[in-house]
Image (cartoon, rainbow, N blue to C red; front, side):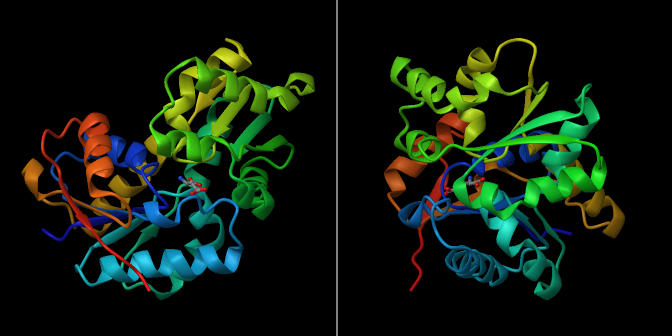
Length: 265
Ligand code: DGL
């Protein structure tokens, strides 16, 4: 089936999921919307995030997508259920796959979850982790500076490392052997986070397990595509096209990606 797969996020973070989707499903076409102008979603109310997420989903619906990946934990936490109920195609979120990845590797059943304020307050990871392992001990920490840091593009140097180290200070007194990057922006800070928590903690994102789910659903419904050309992937942003283009070509290694502006309201 030649229809594209839609992917949405509040900004560039969901591209970390697209990277894994492209690696696993090289014949599929992706349409992505990053709501950069209204990013971050993390500090916003659940009602507002739900409204924005539906706007992004509706915009992709008009492109006849065959599946939607909500590549944003904050949006998944508050909107996944309603999207799954009302969309005429399968909708995949990133929280359950992230929890599943953690439960597979944790030895002591002690999992730290880093996320936005919205994701942490929603309790969605606790619910997912407990549904997989009721005795799991969970250490949640909201990291509000991380999304703006990644969106600014300044996530590689000493300043970024220092900000990560400071933000993770409350973890010094906690015990856990596995850490979930519970925000799709955070894999860009993975090196800094790993350096801060040390070599005895496994740091993982939900990208691989999410790609597993997408792959399984395509196979189940037999809606795989046979072939795609790199110029068929489309990226929409509500913010600066130039900045988004730079990020897409750097992260996804697409030399001249098709990026267009889109606006809501
Ligand atoms: N990538 C989004 C997530 O996974 C970031 C949310 C935000 O914009 O604060 O939660």
